[in-house]
Length: 277
Length: 201
Image (cartoon, rainbow over all chains, first blue to last red; front, side, top):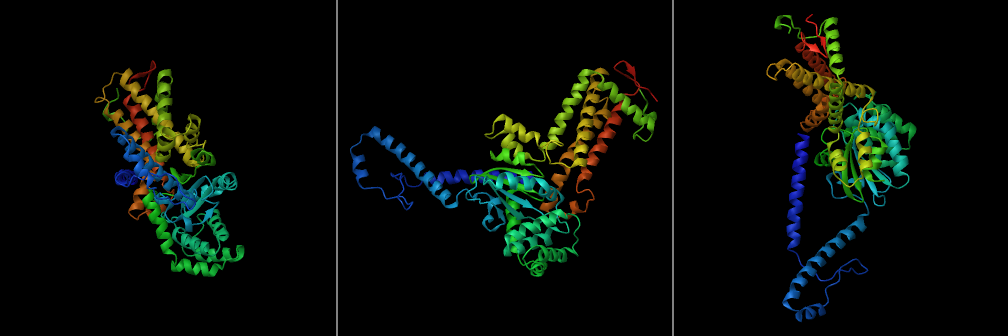
């Protein structure tokens, strides 16, 4: 079922892309190709029209070709302009919807690559990934500035720690990002030991003892599910991207462009090779 | 050949296991069938690991801009004991499943070619391989597919309550392959393999 949805999404995306190409083909054929210092395209000077009046019929076809080339160039420049605003931050994939507000290691705008991780705090495979491979990626790719990692709590596995832990992670991130990463590791280091009865108390205790965050307030917000909208955004993004009910799932981007998807506890070599780093 | 009345359906006795092991060993003593077992087992294991990361394999191993050495690096690191995608127990299970898949296919091919048995006439043996293939596929895809399907219907908790978090599918696949190997051996009972008789009892 998951694979079929993936095919439908790709087919829809391809159809939309083709439709978009058709619409763009009906747009204006601007004669200019340079942007000014403000990044805006200057209006075509009037002298260009008088120059074309003296050309022969055969040259008209050349003009059309030039117009199409200029149109492509202007489209490329618009893309470049957009990329300059966003840097390398991925923004054209469901997995990247809303990542600007998510816990992030590194800088997606400047790093050549971005890894968006959908992970469940109660998942054993996620815990295994965060017990070695994550640290390798952090030290070998993130710290040198080659990659950024965006973590998206994605409670789809229905373990005792899945939803409460996800709520607590979001509530903690709202207060202090460093504390978020500490809490995330706390959950994975103690995978399998949480129950729905004790996770809130143990979360509060950990935050109070190990971070500067008010653990009791975080636990209360987690119980109240105060940040459900953030989790819903993650769930929607993950489902639309095709992650389905599995975790961990990673979406890799290189210079803002989607590269591929990786599932499971894969090692540094897989990530580094896939990203061409 | 053994009569239906004397044929066992389950390997419940030690002699059943000895018979299964001896038959498999005799088949694999023939070099060509050993090669078939090795290649088909490797192919089965490759299929198993690829199904865990189809987009990655499609995008970068089969297609995409990477040089050949990078493609092989990614593919190799998806395998048990080379990469980290599988824990120790799952890795051992996958190796066992791949091995039994190869043995199954080699035994069936031997039975069909050397004993000149038709597919219809060896329905038990063919059924064994089909069942074994189903089990192997179940082991490879089972937990991943089930997790995906259950998640779509909001029933991911079903996988969470399984004591082995989906590894049950791999164990089921292994069981099916063992049965398949046994049924193949039973189907070959009374004949000869590599010049050695396969006992009736």
